Amino acid sequence: MTHIGFLIPLLILLFTVAFWSMRLRDIVQAVRKVPVLTPQRGDCLPAEAPLISVIVPAHNEEAVIEDCLKSVLQQDYPRYELVLVDDRSTDRTASKAEEVLRGRRNCRIVSVDHLPTGWTGKCHALAAAIPHVSGEWFAFLDADSVLHPNALTRCYGEAIRSQVSMVTLSPRLVLKSFWERALQPAFAAMACILHSPAKINDPASPVASANGMFYLISRGAYDRIGGHAEVRDLAVEDIGIGKRVKAAGLGLIFANGRCLLHTRMYTDLNGIIRGWARILSAAMNYEPSTVLKYLVMHILMSFPVLAAALYFYTPEALLLWPSSWPILPVICLTQLCVIPPLFCVQLGIHPRCAALLFLGNLALIWVFVLILKRIVRQDALQWRGTVYPESRHQPTNLNPAASPAFNRPPALKEAN
Image (cartoon, rainbow, N blue to C red):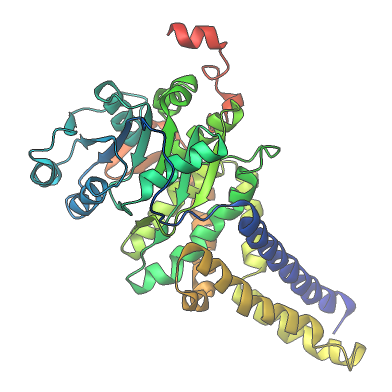
């Protein structure tokens, strides 16, 4: 084998070691800087706990809406109200919600029958709820998510303890089918690479994000950043909200909520691919250079490439380093056996799902290819049966610095 032919597999193995070393660093930082919120009784609340308005947007969610609403109604927090936004549903979402909420004074249903130009459906649904709520804090909860009875109390308590205006949770992913177990952990890991929770919680880091499955935000902070109107055209409005809260210096905590929140995101292969393509493309702000970087990175650390690198590395390494050639392969294999299960544990997923990581990585590569194609063609955003002609696969105002409205002086914002 030529020196070049040996150098390439050697570099691939070194890259693999570096990649997984960085992932181990991320896990260690998460343990140190990301609080794990667990159910606790007897949380210290103010004598007069503020009213929390729980807002649930729902578009054709008849299969899951009952579990979601019932989990809210079981909250042990002393003062809350619940508003369901029926967003142009054509199924039995509204009727099922009415059955659950009937007779409860602190609950109401808001119906949305149209989508204004320039808005994504979820943003408009959430904004439509605000005139109907009275809370000093808002809790936004996806319809496919379920809360532990202690969730509102724990999140509000964390906000007070940390003196922040916003608390958001990572969930325990409910994985029932083969494809969910094979792909979801890899995609969740990619989301953590793009927006490290430890860096989100570091005031000195510009990294910021939020998880739209659940976040609690004070009314003052929500008004200060312009609410959902400020992110109305974003495919990942939650990330936009989180970035604006942190950029405004209002305080943001990204907590591990695997004990308080569980979610089943997508149920089949097609849904997983389409859903994560939308999330990741928007999370990377439709920047082709960013997508290409992660595409190359995940190709290099994919199982076929690693297997080929080991195959071509071993014969030459045996000749060059007869006694020490196994060190690099052993490090690689040890990392593969140890680090992915640790990440699964953090997510509340069974560690055995890590054995399917190689499939998840291949699916992730395919998603990056799809995203690049959509960026090159500047395709319109499509999600849940709606096409958004104004929202193209091109850089948007995901970051506050790109948004003229966010950078208006506070006095002008208040006047509006």
